[in-house]
Amino acid sequence: MKILMVAGSMHVGGIENQLMHLMRNVDKNKFHIDFTSDMPEAFYREEIEALGGNFLLLENKCRNHPLKYCRELYRIMREGKYDIVHAHELFHCGITVFVAALAGVPCRFTHAHNWREGDDESGKYSLIRRSYQSVMRTSIRLFSTTQIACSTWAGKFLYGKKCLKKKSYHLVFNSVDTTKYLDKFDCIEEGDFIEKDGWKNVINVARVSKVKNQVFLVDIAKELKKRNKKIRILCVGDGDDDEMKQRMMDEIKESQLSEYIYFLGVRKDVDALLRKCSAFILPSKYEGMPLVMIEAQATGLPCISADTYSREVDFEIGKVKWIPLTEGVETWADSIEAAVEMEKAIKSEVVNAIENKGFDSKIFTKKICELYEKDYRRKREKNN
Image (cartoon, rainbow, N blue to C red; front, side, top):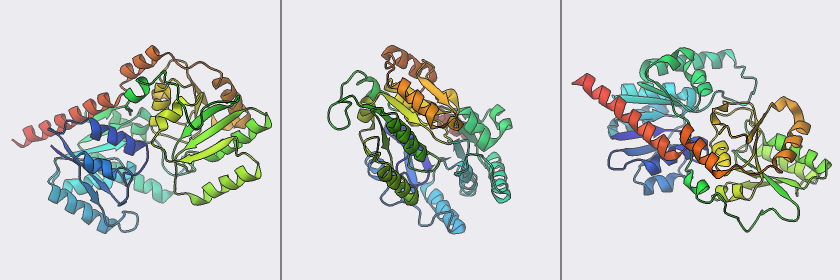
């Protein structure tokens, strides 16, 4: 069965991480997965190709040359003779499944990964944007054969409430490779950024952007310094908002926060860094179902999170504190102080939560592949 993933650049990000879990765990004898991308040097290109997938470069980005982009996508789908196209780019899924239908792809999947778009946390959109969203929802409804969402909030946002009652709609939670967290659950790490000399670590893992709200973390670092608390924030991730990053760096320098907040960029040792910390923090303006929250809880860390996305991600073992962003830095700093003094979760509780909620990547892979086979079988039966 040939599958084409249309998921942006396949650089570093939550959706990309999720799809790589699928790529690593899928039965290669039954499924062949290719990826489109508009970035030649994408982070996951080498691994995709090493795992047997094709990395198919699109010459033109949709936002700049939509017609040329659609023609290129159509060509790839026709030449590849794909059984399934799986689209992951929010409302842009409407374009992808329309092109897939024109190209004769029988099974067309859309996947909702977020419940909001853009940098405006109010969720207010212009008339043009609302019109675009409406057209794309109609296209998804007409041309997709299966609709998936990572959370109920994400499903309502992309598909509308009525779609959630359809047989073609499926809620499949995001997942992580929990073995590397559970196998080393009690491991004591060494090296850089270990907690010593009275310092405690709080970690944030996210793309640096307005939506992920690292600016707020700088404000929290100021408050922690003001209180003379030996708590430092480790920010893992990178982004393309150079202006915002420079403003934060200038603020850190001006306020002498170099001991209180660190920007570490993209790292391959996130699991080890999590084990070096006493708590996790996520002040995002919105999320779909953040993988990092699953990873942090799988490590056993107490978590402080904005209440800006579905609580379906919560392991429900008493380790997540949900706080409105409107509460301000004082409340967040109070919660951080409390979190770093909490005990880690008990491993057995973490294991049970992962199994009960289906947060492991192998469970995710099994569910997605079952949906692929179900839709493919249904299409073949209909055509015979």
